[in-house]
Length: 117
Image 1 (cartoon, rainbow, N blue to C red):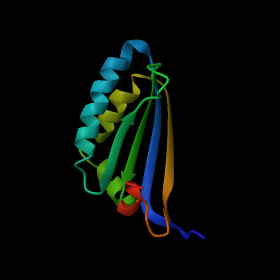
Image 2: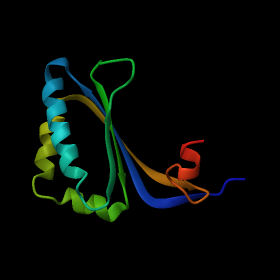
Image 3: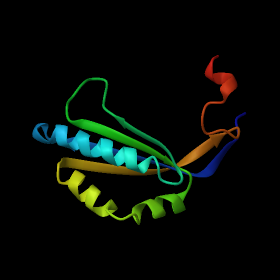
Image 4: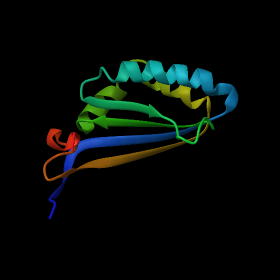
């Protein structure tokens, strides 16, 4: 039976709904924000995604952070609030989910020995 433990890692999943006329600008701002954020201490992953069904204005951003203190430091960066205000101004809707990362048998990412199985 698998052992499941809560880790200090935090996953953020943000769903954005963007109007057609704002999508190009939204993607530009998101690309800049992701490039900046991935360099922050404790940011382990940034993925900007869209549904496989195609371009309908829905995008998802997934972030993996080492712990809450890293998120707190990120939010204190000069310009952080302005970037989010600029992005939010382009949106129809936004939904944020903050999740605890669970470790299964001690791992949170697929172990190397299973990656090629």
